[in-house]
Image (cartoon, rainbow, N blue to C red; front, side):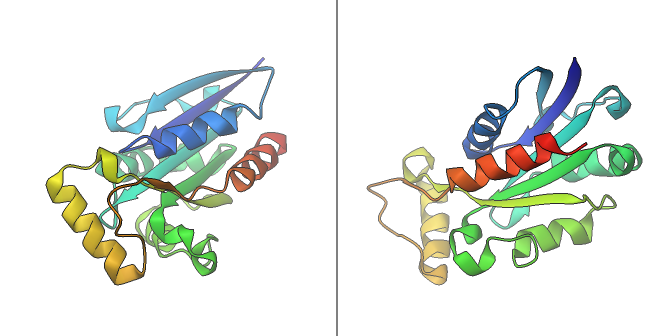
Length: 174
């Protein structure tokens, strides 16, 4: 039975939710899932596939993502590995691809690892999860970028069909 390593960096749970939906698309594999914030050390050669997903907060990835990638980039280069990022910018159609998304470009600029399989997914605007300070900052960002400033409701922008398609494509690659 193939072993798959899934690493994720999630702040408010949307990236983890995306990973969970992706995992529904596979069967017959042993999945090892780990939070990147714990800075796992692992031998990637033990896994048939490696999937890494990370979210953006205030324009940045969590530092653990780049720490992991820098520590394991040689293993990632030879592993059957994929990377996806989750951000609110991807709610706009013109920013939904790895080629057009500023945060994917930022990752590729900062990372010594250049994944062959890349995905970009829109996240969720979860005002109900934010504290007062976070709400103010995110509301300001949304105002500047033409997003919702209505703090009375949460909005999920994730295209679940796109998530499932990405997962199916990645799981089927040899």
